[in-house]
Length: 151
Length: 112
Image (cartoon, rainbow over all chains, first blue to last red; front, side, top):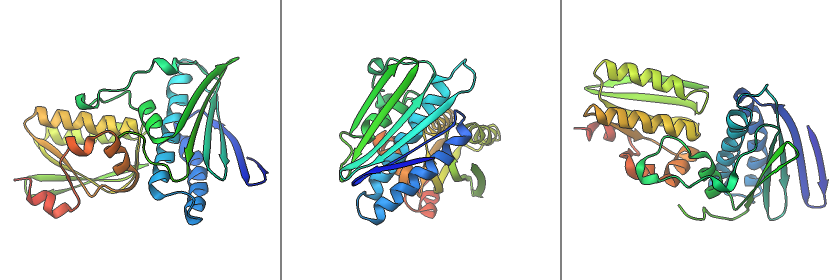
């Protein structure tokens, strides 16, 4: 576990095996951070749920999709708490994916799949994906005090 | 971790979920509910009172079971949903697709 800070910024990073059973261990640390932020009235309970949901979906995607057919790899998690919000970055070394080509689900059709990225995009304020030299980086930001953009 | 228990209330079966309904545990729920459907239990209430977290795989499992139950001329409803699962259901508009009750006894009574 790494920890660093610049002024009002706090940074944490760690790596876990890309297996679903490690996701909740990683989530526990994120929850701990979010709970502290809620106690300081920086983040609402609702926003906490949004950040948790997005994290879980991003971790799932790395484990289930990125490493599909590959030897088990690692998932790296970076968390940055700033004055204005929280940033969650998930890194894997699996298959890249066409982030912009993923269509929005038709919610009226009650889909049973294809919802993960939609949840991430709707619950977070800013989502960026970058595939570079074998590394896939998903960066998600949630501003304190923000609402779901369109639900 | 997900614990699945059930209570029979007349011809209504309440399926109590405790813990996380996610990519790891969704198959457990599917197995349990498929067994209920095979035993002709077609009036189901998913009790989310102790459900802490749901992910898209968990949502997929609930929607799939909802469709299966409706296909058998039954129905599946949800009771006592709050917290993170309620946020996800609201986002995906599932709180409109499902009949959702804040009170379990009322949910059972109104099943008819």
